[in-house]
Amino acid sequence: MPPSGWVLLITGTAMAAVGLVWLLAPSIPLVGRLPGDIAIERDNFRFYFPATSCILLSAVASAAVWLVRYLLR
Image (cartoon, rainbow, N blue to C red; front, side):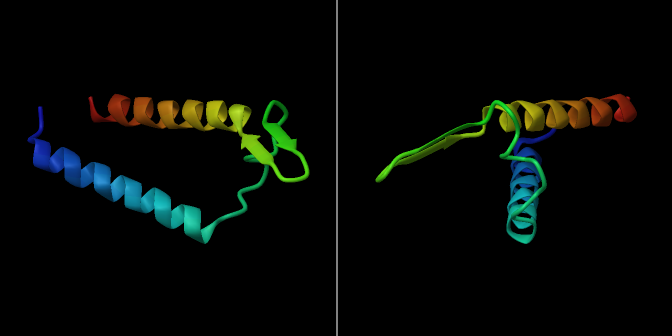
């Protein structure tokens, strides 16, 4: 098991990279507009929950982690 300092450093770097991508590419096509995403808009109220987008991003992230672990064996 790697020392906890390295884990924190890698986790922080990954979070910073995700934040940078989020700032530089705010309109990734289709993410947030998939069937199954919940959007409710009223006069003074707006609720949005990207359920399908979350599931899709989770599957992509899981596949990426699996691939990295497979290649590092």
